Length: 252
Image 1 (cartoon, rainbow, N blue to C red):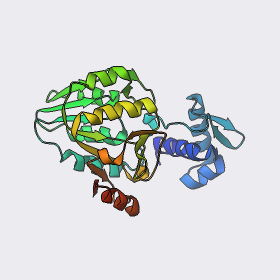
Image 2 (cartoon, rainbow, N blue to C red):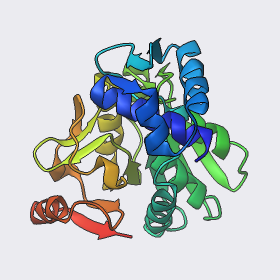
Image 3 (tube, helix red, strand yellow):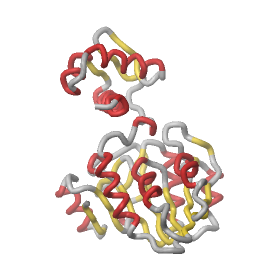
Image 4 (cartoon, rainbow, N blue to C red):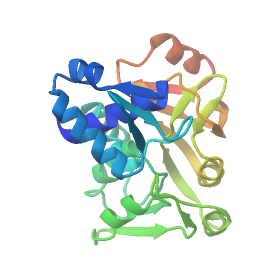
């Protein structure tokens, strides 16, 4: 397992349980205790955890996994989701993209499309797409969030007010029938909702790890979603409930 994947796994465990043990991590990941200690030292230097005797504890009660440590897991599923999502786009479309690892893969899958206009509030997507002369790139203003690389807040929302999008691809930290689309940060949720409101078609791209979860802040209710593209390992009962609510569910 690569270091990035180990770090992501450790942080996900911390977010869920509040503490981790070196021996348990070593056994679960199949790496040496020395390797685990080096990983914990790195995360402590980045102030993402506090080391203890034999393990580590989260710095806070719950925290958002930084984007630089997302994406290592379910990589193949995200690529399949992105390739399927790209088939929803036609030449000349105006396409919105929220931040996230899966929406980033969607952007990469669109680079060979012709005459597209991409609108995003995600700095990492913008930096990759800015060098593509075949694409017209529109980036919102706003306050940058270091956790997600998204530009958020009133400035971002004001820059979206006059735009009309054919389709928007939305990433989320949670997708559920009851709570709708959710994310960790309330301002980010509000800005993403503003992007959704400018689009004729709303497509959620989320791997199985997000299906059924509920994060802190609601982006929108399920009724605002036209389609969910996820992987085949997502909970079928939850997918069935979303389909009954009127969401087109596509698994890849």
